[in-house]
Every structure is written in C-alpha cells, then in structure tokens.
Length: 325
Image 1 (cartoon, rainbow, N blue to C red):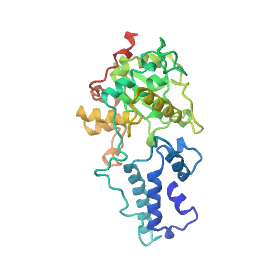
Image 2 (cartoon, one colour):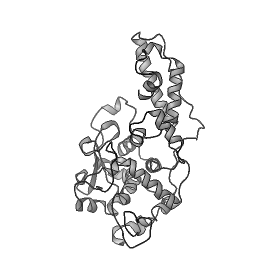
Image 3 (cartoon, one colour):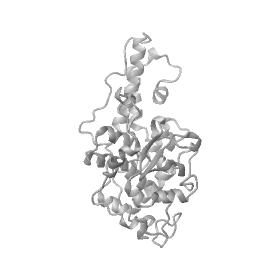
Image 4 (tube, helix red, strand yellow):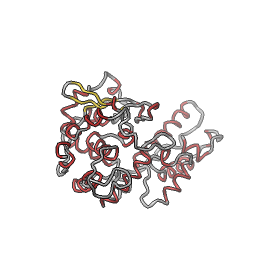
C-alpha cells in the first residue's frame, strides 16, 4: 500500500489506477531496500531506494518478496472488481519469473566460511567486546555479539528476534529447555505475523552455556545492543555484522546475516524433518491453509528430537564450548 500510494498519490480515485501505475509499483519494489522501514526511517520508498543504490553492497527485496507484494495489490483490485468500483484488474499477471533467476538468490554459509566467522577474535579471544573486538587478546566476552549469530544459526531466529531476548523467554520443562520468541511491543520485541511461539532450545546452545548465561544475567539479555529510533536492534547489529564478515573475509554476493536462517532450513531438509514440524520450528507460515488454523500445533517437547537433528557437517566450534574455557 505504501508503494502504491507513493506511485499514484493518496488522492487518486481507484478507478484511475492504470496498469502502467502497477508496473511502476513493481519497479519501485524491485529497487526497495530490504528492511527499508528500519534502515531508512522517515524516508519514502523512492528516497530509500536511491540511498540504497549508492551502497557498495546494496540489499533489495528479492523477487519472491516483490511477487508477494504484487499479489496483494492484485487481491485489492480483485475485490474492487467484485464490488464494481473498477471495470478490470490492472495488476493481473504482473508477477516476475523466478525460474533460472539468481540475481537476488539468498546464499547459505559454507562450513569453511562459518569456521572463519566463528574463529574471529570476538569468539576465539579478543582485547574486549566493545571497540577492540577485532584485536586478538585474552577476553572471551559473551554478550550479544557472541550469542546472536549462534542463536540464528542453530535456532533459526531472525536477527531482531535474537537481539531482543529476555531472561524469562527461556524456561525449563524436564530435560528440555524452551525458548519463547515473543511479540511484545512494550519490550521492543517484534515477531513476523505478530505471533508469539515457543520452541525447544537446540542442544548445541545448551552445550555452549546459553541457559547459564540467561540465568546469570538481568531481565534483558543483551542490553548493550543499541536500538534505533523505531526500537529495532537489528539496524545497528547488521552494520556490526557486516564488519565481522569483512574481517573474516567471507563477503560474497547473496551472503548476509539472514543466510543463517536459510542454513537452518536446509539442515531441517537434510535431516528429513517433516514439513509441518519444520514450519513449527522455523515459524514459517503455510500460507494460511485451513489445516494450519486447526488445533494448537506442536508443543516444544514434541519438537525436541527434530531440532536436535539440525547439524552442520564441517563446522568446528569446539573452542566455544563452555568447559573448554
């Protein structure tokens, strides 16, 4: 709606919207930065796109996301046709082809890249966890910069979800640690689809000492992570992570922080975890199917075996295990 309003103007009657307008909307979305609201607060999408185009490593919406947005516009005009506000749908059949398109493909982390990343001083020993995180030293700071990438790799969290965790988001049920991914705007905790979910904690995160860390810290687990004016920690953290990638020498087209979530999805596939259970662990939507709306879904304890199957052959993070310190 934001893109459509920018292109046609807020006062334009819906009957005056043409196919050329919708094509212009699609073209604007193709140039729109990912996470534009957080990264370019206060700017129009057009202005944000112009700023992003000047960046050395620009990140724009991928084609599948643009197609989703265009499908919503198509649905809006389909309703307008049914209600006889317009004679025809100007947004029909404007989806972009995806077959063979790799221009916006999201890559996954290779084992050797992960080893380089988690071998950096912030993980292997640095002078301090603040300004001197790149410099080798004896400090082993276990703060947000340490935990957030690991949480996203082994738990499939989105960046801001991991950055905004609180101590009471972790609980114990028998032998199973349970992580709540909460939607709570008062805490600046935001979850896609505004839905709170609970999942079992990956055994590797237990081995690395995350439950102990959570129990020993205050209510907010990573208070040192700065928030932007909209209450998101991901804006500043993504900039730091880009510097970490550069320091590790693992920057390539399509490889971003969000790629951890793609690794997580691939690991579930390789472990042959059934799709419905994979969707519950990663909190992916089934597209609003009728079956998804029935019942209460899987309990965290039901999914504990499934998440334990998430493995990354070739990844060596033995130096991060708490008892090795």
